[in-house]
Length: 214
Image (cartoon, rainbow, N blue to C red; front, side):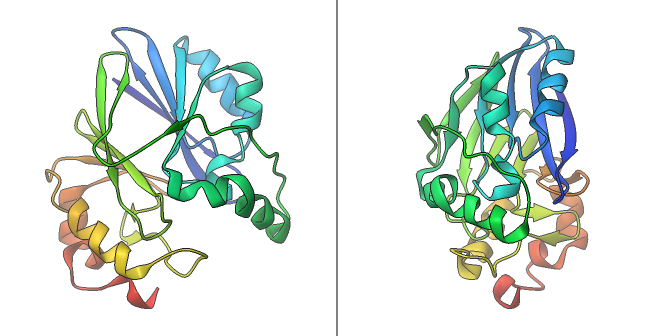
């Protein structure tokens, strides 16, 4: 397995290309902006793109979808609780922040807790982890967790945004912290980390702090 990352857009969001090197199949996770750059990344990989998976549908995670789908006719997977962002709220947020945004078509496939998704021979299980967004999910498998804005190195996602819920965030973090300590965490912003490192050093994952005041 190979995971390539591009940090895109004014919000410095991480877009991940997950490639099964045995079958040369790939999925793109959270194409948030700079669609042309992401198209070049996929083409340079030499892999066949099979799908776009979304951890959630905030504006900084979906802004590159329209450009991607002009080049790759692949389905977009999203948890239905984030449809309000995908269809309306992210476009409004783009206006507020003054960032370019093209409304994408779709989504095409619904994600749900416990779904097992394939990328070639790789397998990832969907974990629904609401809090930062109602439909936030993490894609867990093959020793990694691609968790969007649930957990960052040393911090967590905001819970003061529209439709965020700090109580749900605390419950999601408690579940997420039960993954194996060696699990490599690929977050929506910032560098990668591990569950074990965050349990040692991140007060939110270790239970020494709560999301309620964020």
